[in-house]
Amino acid sequence: MQQPLVILFLGLALSPIARAEGIADCPDLKPFTARYAVYRDHELAGETVSRLEALENGHYRYSVETYGTHGWARLLGVRIEESSEFMVHDNEVLPIHFKYRKAIALSTKKRSAVYNWSTRQAHGDGGDGPWSMHLDGPVTDKALVNFALMLSTCRGDQHPKFTVIKRGKASPWTYRRDGRYKVPTPLGDFIGIRVDRIHPNPNRHTTTWHIPEFGFIAARLDHDDPEDPPVSMLLMALERDGKSLHAQIEHD
Image 1: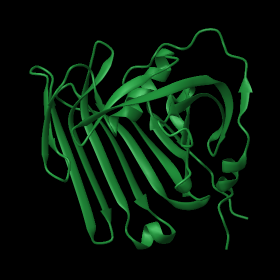
Image 2: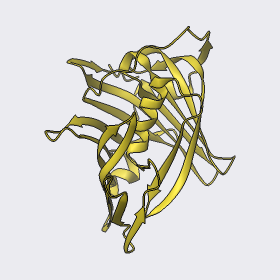
Image 3: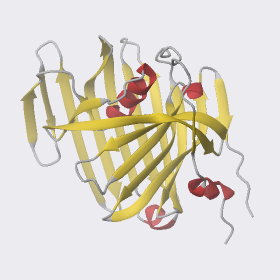
């Protein structure tokens, strides 16, 4: 069976480089569409599309859609949709309306949440019943945390930390910024900033590489969990600021 040569990027080493003095100013919230190839256990399994949209009410929407295109993921009709309408206040990304839907075979799960920052109250449906909570400070949701990390990386934060709400429960998600690397991607080689998530389980590892040239969008993600096959995502196409980039995939 012919396999896309893009899978070779999963095995390429990422080379650290000397840290440049300073960092580019954080970009405006420019809408974008980023498409990723998703690999599970080193086999192509699906595609993920992340988008940032500007809304007419002055808010923004960040969304992530993942669907199976190969193997069991395709046969089972895997499709996961997450979206978060949000606003930016005092450099904080604050969610307003979160929606989640996961469909596999004949099973569908849904979750939602609404955040009222004037009353500092949040409520939602976690799929197993309604919940409500008081907001003591800035929080984010499971989808929006990815965009918040992008902006945090742009600002140069060395140890980003977010309070993530999931099913009405707050959990701290902490990260560590780890230098600048030459990152091979299907779109070419770029200088990227490595960020590692610090999981409560030290045997779990999640690493993203954010590209300043792309407005700090992640060009690659690697996730290793001792209880599941490894998962990787590679940026294959990007539309942003009136420009489009697409990987040229060759076959052997």
